[in-house]
Image 1 (cartoon, rainbow, N blue to C red):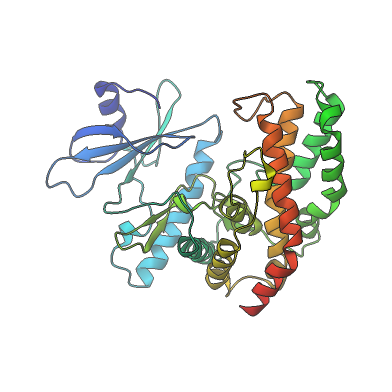
Image 2: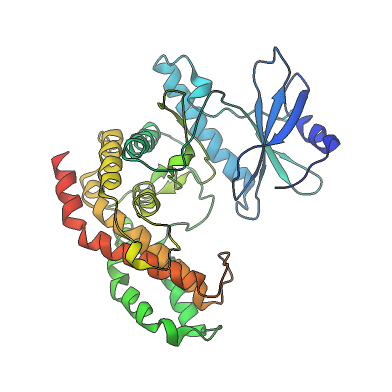
Length: 365
């Protein structure tokens, strides 16, 4: 996390419309992308705040990023006001503007900072249970549902983030180049991935045919990207940097890829990989409840495909990086990316085997 002097902290905060000086600024959380701090205020202050340095190397268009977030949070806030919700600042993030009216400040050094209202008396969960998997499905489904009538076009904060055709092209380019001389070792896995490539790119095909829409999705649906109140009820969805147009598969499938795997994604023993069906079914139930009023038949029918898509896509990405010599993902030993790829391919196999089971469960809802 970037170190800041007291003077630097005050200089950054002076650009935002807050009336009182803070008593302290302390690190908050352990996020891997952005540097985050809690701004502690004195007694009588209406709010405390979250100060965050936006990683502009990952999110290269900060203006677009913040525009997306402003549109989404503003739209949700209007919906909550219309519904008579009283504690809105606990239900949706609120960003503090700068004196120039923007929701971010660029420093002379080229860093980007934003300030939001801190939501007190909350908790978050790292471990997935059937209960919070259901809560997550419902929360992310409701999140998408509230945004179906946004009348403004949002941009892609990470272009082609979940574009399967692009990921296959990248794998094929890596295979042709074989810069690290690793292709012979992984050729059997490459061949297996190629045998499914056409089927796994069906979303892009259906989109071009006009049969599958893109929605405003969260695109990073993890249980720790929600805040819960003291009693364990969901308050709001957070970490909105990846909110952008995508297929609903992004929100459904990516959650299950991480949450429903019984082991970590880099476990080298693929015998440990299994599907937690209690999590799959709980999340699916919540998600369909949250999206039922807008989900098209084709989107509902392809939820089993979405569960397959994300371990497949992640296998492709890990294997591509391994063939390229480990240039993207951080690794701690030479075969780290290969272990990840094999782990995800085994998970993909299990999702294929479980397709009928999931389809039957969806049909009962």
